[in-house]
Length: 271
Image 1: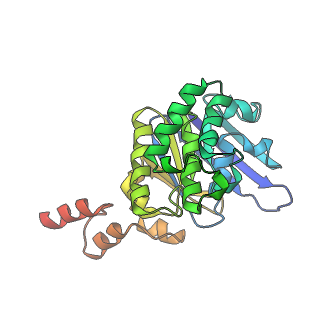
Image 2: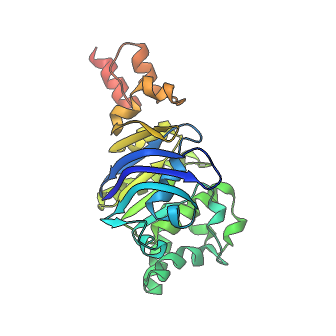
């Protein structure tokens, strides 16, 4: 489990705290969705999970982040990387290998995985994310959407127990979004935890996260079961977020909140 206990963080040179008293739990076998307006602290939150904060990003940190009981302040990033895989919002920062295949194999090999096993993982994940035809290309020649999928794949090959994804659907088409749902759901079924930061509320509704948290101004505006948080129209709008369209339609016609078209239709037919 990952535990955040009253976590505060202020970047060096800033007078304002990016995180203000965040307390959360992330359990294995669950999906946590993280939502919020721009500059709410979502990406900063992810950086605390694998030790980038406070080891890489300088600033003032208060509170405790525990990864399976290990305090991230005292553990090196190299050790935390074996536990938490992080996909950055800007994927071009992640690549340095000559080919995409080499890039996907680098992480697991660096963790001590046999090269043949690393290649097997790379080929499997690349196929899942529809980038297997790009394996011989240099990563920096890929399109923005392809880079995003490649960055997700690079983290998945490491098979860390915790996976943090920052805006994974950015620049993706409908087919890839469906593939991402399948991949994330499979991780959950295997007992791994997935933390997803996303502005794509429709995709999150289809993903059906176990829990969700909305950040606003570095604080927790609401945290709870995924369905309940996504359906809270008042909180979502107060935090400059648009609730899922089915939730809005259900509210307009006087029905209880529904996240998906199928559940909304079923509710309409029952009237």
